[in-house]
Length: 509
Picture 1 (spheres, rainbow, N blue to C red):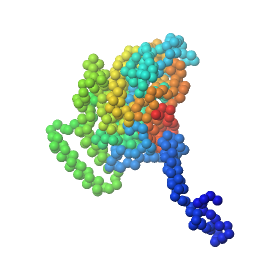
Picture 2: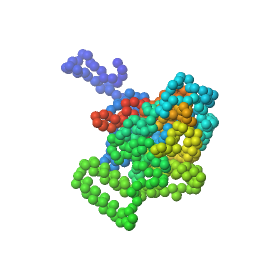
Picture 3: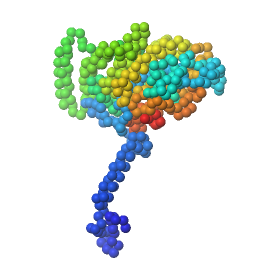
Picture 4: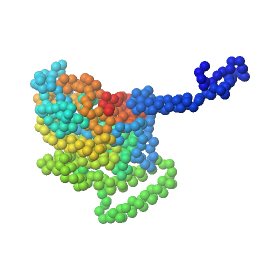
């Protein structure tokens, strides 16, 4: 019999189940106690690591944030240790062509002008397809890794060593509005929470003087799906994105003419006293507490938002680096100022910043966004210089300030473009069968390339990924299990990823 174990005396019967433990053989001596304790702690640590990496068959019951109604934006703990603290999502509205930016296809160059094999009679969003067409821009190896990137975005290409490219994304629609909805909310229909709303509902924010979620529209206007890109859907309205940009600060924020700063502050202080008294009269009223908290945040924003949007404190070198002082390209200068604003918001601890490049204008025929149907070379020739330098400067600035270590930067668009030009046109039609996104910063491998489209860039064939997978990976990097982050709505446990999605573990650092 093993030493130290309980011993049963078969000769002594003092009733069913009775036994005797000799004093000379303790159940657990000191050495065994220390040994078993260390093994238990090791097991707990291993289980936690496995769970964090999603390798443990874990409980899938809902994990909802515990929110204090009086402090709805307070910072909250994630499900497991996060790699990133906040997110900057850069969204090129209009479906930016992967074949003219980041997805190099030598075969497309080689077979330029030929029919695409297997595409006889292929009809896409706007009609019949013409022949295979190479990019009007040359691709060159960039960075130390030699990643092939187009001359359309050379400054971003120079940062290829900091990027994790996903070349195998697939969508569910070839229409702009539903496509934007799908990328921003995980659903093609309207009325669902945006990814930023999910994140800020779950995690709150590090800065109580600014909104937890800020959307920065393009200087020319909103994307086609407009505010649905940053809406809260069925989540509490407090978690919708607050939209403003460097040129258009928040509406109705300034102090009324004729009201002094002293009077304004005294009025707010008096109102706060009345609100606190009102809360005492109705203890436990969470909706009242949340409403008062939202009003108080709005009051604090009277000071914080003008300060963060005032770019006069930026150095001349910084403005020059971004292109914000470019008098020859007004649109570029405006977008550059939005990029500086995005950096300042991240610097202040705003949890989720969504920066748009491209806007929807009726009858614009792609002039204001990346929808290059008819005159791709002419349209992209205007968009590329507007987008390239400011966005590259934003990445460089985040990196040199140490913010890229804790910020996940995501570049995306609603779907991709065809390797052919449309019949009778000089542009590419919509294509959700295979397109590109990239990530940089906290928690992702760089330089790294995941997945691939076919030899012409038409269809994802290797490491095929969905937008659900893309969202699941973003949540994972923020320390959240996408299968357990749910909100009960109309009898359904709703998720950002619906009932789909897997974390793209190959891209994780």
